[in-house]
Length: 229
Length: 339
Image (cartoon, rainbow over the protein chains, first blue to last red):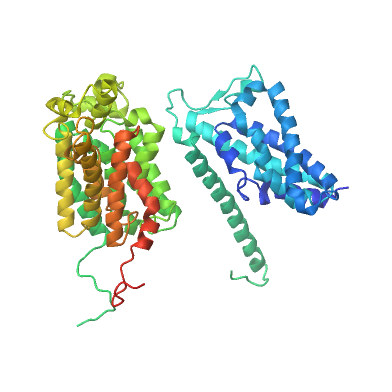
């Protein structure tokens, strides 16, 4: 079973402390290519979450039977099988989106986030924890990709949720900026993704630094030892 | 006598003084530009300067730096003027503001401010805008339209519609397009003979703007603000490749003189590749930097899809600066070349 503390730690690691995109900086290739709008970013993250949860469970269940020396090829095989399932699911149910995301769904196999969690976590922990870890790592990726995709779409084209009709037919994208907004094409191109990702990393570091400064102030205020770091 | 520790500098070369002279050196080119296009150039320079000073002040405040010292040094103004001079003169005001903001905020201050930027801010602004707004950045005004200042002002302010008839091809574009459409049946010398577009030697009107930059650049060199290496290297690189291709096939490639005096070549040679921050620091390195930038600028402007190649050439070479500097360290005094 999983304790409350364990759950909190896994969730905190996945969503913030070891966030795949802005702390571990893993999986940059899909990040750059797919987050040209919010919907694409969210949908690829959802696909990755499914793969990570299932692969975490599968690898953790089999971890005692997988020979240590050939564990990486075995992990890849397991992940590849799961990705194929997700790929076929997307193709069958969300075909238009499947066409847009293209090669990046099959490429989840080679996404370093998946392999990193399988190797670093699922290989050493019981199935339940590994599944939860996969889900929360994916959620961390989900919110960063959603934020990045939303920013890029808003700056680059002035809209949000473009392509939402591919997922929910009938819904319309939002035109947030005036119609004659020319659109900063750079934001949609790969350099824009790098620049905005850099800004997000800076933002996270700024929050951490501010929290650390506050933490450092607290003990000195109560008269405890002053840490002159 | 009052002795201080070495090294000693003979000249008064504060950042402010240097930047002021760079601005002065731009004046002949600006004068020719105003004569060619109209006083709208002053408006563009003012827009860029205001945006640059505002962005500089904001970033200095955010970074807790003294406002007066850095705001008054004129480096932001040089960046702003270079941006205003490289952008199309009828560009809408917000395009300049976007370019300046990108140059000052991202290319300069996010990398650590004055003296720390690995990329030339003005060229970053140009590259960002031409990638993001290719149509607007390629709208160069047709010459001899006789637009009044108020009409020009309306276009820049976005009050008047942008009409295609107001824009014309730059000499570089005219050659590229004619060669592409002609498919070998058109040769460059007969094209260049058309004085209406190509003027006396490089491009009607534009050749004198470039000559103005050349004049200002030579003055900067004489004052010792810029070394001869980078401009000479740039011109050598451009002339070398342009001359070789021209000698090989004069029907398909324009002569080196045309390339020297069109587009941003002269501005680039004396005001961009000579940037002491983003360029090389060793004498030999400066020459190599200029040479490679000249070669690349030619390749991009003739064989690439963009109207001019100076900006991309300089940015690509900016990346190579640490490498070039590493291999061109002058021997330490007294060591006679051994490392």
